[in-house]
Amino acid sequence: MQFRLPFSEDHLIDLPPAGAIRERTPTDLPRDAAGTTTATTRVPRDASRPRDSARSSSVCLEADGSAFVVHFVRMRRARRYILRVRPDGALRVTIPRGGSRGEALRFAQRHLSWATRERVRLQAARRAPSEWTVGMEIPLDGVPTRIVRDDDIVRVGAVAVRVGPEVRNLRPALEHGVREAAKRLLPPQLLALAATHGLAVTRVTIRNQRSRWGSCSRDGRIALNFRLLQMPPAVREYILLHELMHLRHPDHSRRFWRAVEAVCPDFRQAERWLKRSGHDLF
Ligand SMILES: [Zn+2]
Image (cartoon, rainbow, N blue to C red; front, side, top):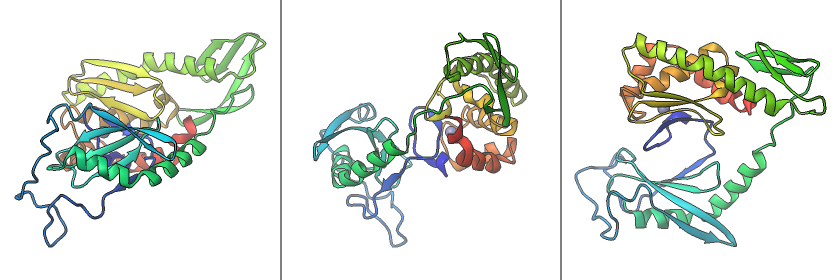
């Protein structure tokens, strides 16, 4: 369910989530007998909090010598406070409708020991990228493809780059080549799909993102990870359609997922691939 993580401005396809902690016993949200948040009783707002600046504000927390930058994100649809450790080690606290920044901060403070453990776990799990050498196979279009060398030209599939004879790890050069290929191939594919569905994209950029496959801004700019070129074509197309459907629904609402399913009926299979194999591309 990694796509259901709360996001605010950009709508991101994340790698499998690092982990999140949700408030189980909300202290300031009234609940009805069924355990769902009632919208009728409003929580008094924290007077010190300016409503609109909360999204970008951050503070620093310290616990046992380790410091955390804490970012606050206000989500009208969120039902409870949610704490996540971001890939960069900072904390992200989602503030639900009617919640306050002060309560979000106390929530984060209460779970700092969890956050400390989680951050250590994440750092341990982050492997150094493996080296790519001649004779190895790397995935292109989801197919293991052998790296071959011919003098100072190194090839993998249709990607060819010039590499000096002293260079052993071919990964930086080849990834640059894959990224250049992605710049040629992904924008036309995205724009063709946009045209098919009557959608307008204002800008496409190809990036080397470490923790997301794509993103879509409210003004129609779509960013794509060059590693899409390494995935099976069906998974790649799902990501393109996922971002395009954000032009209709800038959220991960049920309506959004219905729109995704309408244009990409096999999207769950693609999600499973991303969850199982997405990390192998890094
Ligand atoms: Zn999304």
